[in-house]
Every structure is written in C-alpha cells, then in structure tokens.
Length: 381
Image 1 (tube, rainbow, N blue to C red):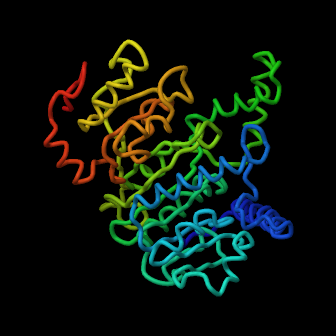
Image 2 (cartoon, rainbow, N blue to C red):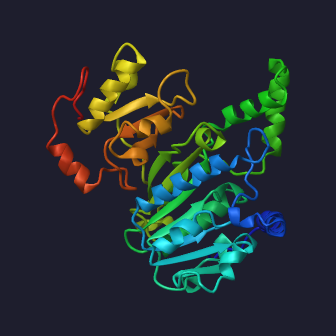
C-alpha cells in the first residue's frame, strides 16, 4: 500500500499490537493459547465468550471458506490461528500474517508443520506482492479483523491493495464484519443490560456514551465494495443466538469493473451497485401461520425461487439464519442479508458467486425449473 499513514492511524495500529501481544503472551504463560480463545469477549455482556460458541463460530467460518474451494490462502490477522489450524493443512499454500505472532507461536516454532504453512509479522497496510512467499492467493481472509482498523480511509486503502494481490477469479473474504445498520440496536441492548431499570432518557444517555467510547469500526457491509468498484455478496452468520449471530456478517468481494486503485477509464471511480439477490416471494405472503410459511418457503427454494424472510433473531417472527440454512439446498451459502432492510434475510436455492449472480450450475437448474413453485408463487421477472 503506497500511502503514508496519519499519526492517528499509526497510534491505533500500535495500540492494538500492544493489547494483543499482552493477551497472547499471557495465554501462553497460562498454557491456554493453543485453545485459540484468548481475547474473545461478548460485546454485549463484556464476559468471555463460551468455548462452545467459539467452536461453532470457527466451524461455520471454515465451512464457508471451504465452499470457496481455495488453493492458495493469505490470512491477514491470523490471531490465535483458529482458522489457520484447521484450513491451513487442507490447502496448497497458506500464508498467515498478523501484527504479532504471539498467538501462533506454537505453530511458528513447530518443525513438523505443513510445508505450505508460512507466517510473517506485519500489518495489513504493509502487504505487497514482494511480501508474498509464492504465487498470488486465490483467497484472502480478513476474519474478525476489520473492526480493529483505525478508520474507513485505512480500510479502503488496505482493501484496494489486497484486491490487487488476488489471483484472477480470486475472492476477498471479510468475516465477522460489524454491520453498522444494526449497531444502534446493539448499543441499546448493551445499555439495557447494564441498567435494566433505566428510563428512556437515561437509556438514551447510556447509548450515547457507549457510542462515544466505542473504538471499533462498524460499516454498511455493501459500502466497501461499492466505493472500490468490487462486486459484493453479503451473507448472514448462521449461528446460535449471540452477539456474533445478531450483529456480524460475512462479505465476499471480487474485483469487478475496476482498474488499479479502484478507478476506471477517465479517472472516474468505478461504480458497482450490489443490490443482492432479488426475492421472488415474500414470507408474509406464503401462508397464515409460521408452519405453513416454512412449508411454502421450502417448496419455493426447492424450485430455485428466492424468498425474503424476517430474521427471527431481530423480529418477533420468522426463522433465524441458522434455521433458514436448513431450508435451502445451498445451506449457509444461500442465507443472505437483505440490502433493503437490515432485519430481513434473502434465501437462495443456489450459492451465489461474489458478483451476486447464481453460479452457472444454478442458472442451468433454474432454466429447467421455471414453473409455478408453491401457493402464491410469483415468477421471477
């Protein structure tokens, strides 16, 4: 990344380096670092996240990455190596970098680790083609990292650089991204937990104070792709109810219609509007009760329709993302966030490419199933 950082950006990067160097070093001293759970705290309660929640989170993330069929992975911000330890041995090459390698010291020092598993200590903005140990990666992972970045300018500069590092057809995965559209609700929930008896005025004061003291970056998950001219897919986190399921999303970015630096001919910034998959059916129109709606939604999806449903973790009715993943043949790869409403999900029968379009296999299947699919079904236009 050929750009000078501001002093505030340098200070923020240095501060996180110090924090996690201490956390990981303490974990090694206690003999718990290899568990990979050091530093993971529930943003609502402030308490460490239970191990079973973190293992579910790790397994869901690894499964989602496996679905992209990577061969050469660049992991930016490997942390304690929760993803590295599982996915690293499965691919041809896996290069993991972080501000500190204290969280993966056991892997770095292991003489028997896979030959394709390599490590380097550097910040995200320091990566360039010369820092890669081999061929360009077809998957770059920033998992549960972006919210530690200093600001949007830093994020955009890093993403621009990383998109240019990708091999043709490669994907940039932003995992565990804080969804700014849901952040006000997260702050209200945290405020209510701290003072359950607070009246509306006091609750407003608590929310304002939490917002002022919040050091983490939250953003509309579609904005980075649109500002950089990258094509975007935004997926829900299909997990048991927790902060990680309610207020985080996964984003897939692929270079599209962009030249170096996110510019197109004539110096204009590339503009890619990512509306996401368009629903052919709406949950409320599929029946008179939730059981009937589920049956009809499954029928629509079995015929390659697209269903718009309320997120049951955010609304008084509707399936959670985890439940919805069981309805669609695509599993968790078919559970998308709605662009139009932050409290709704869009279910697809086929995994979508990061362009927001169906895969070629999905398009072929749809061509053979263009028929009325269920009660109240509407044909795609």
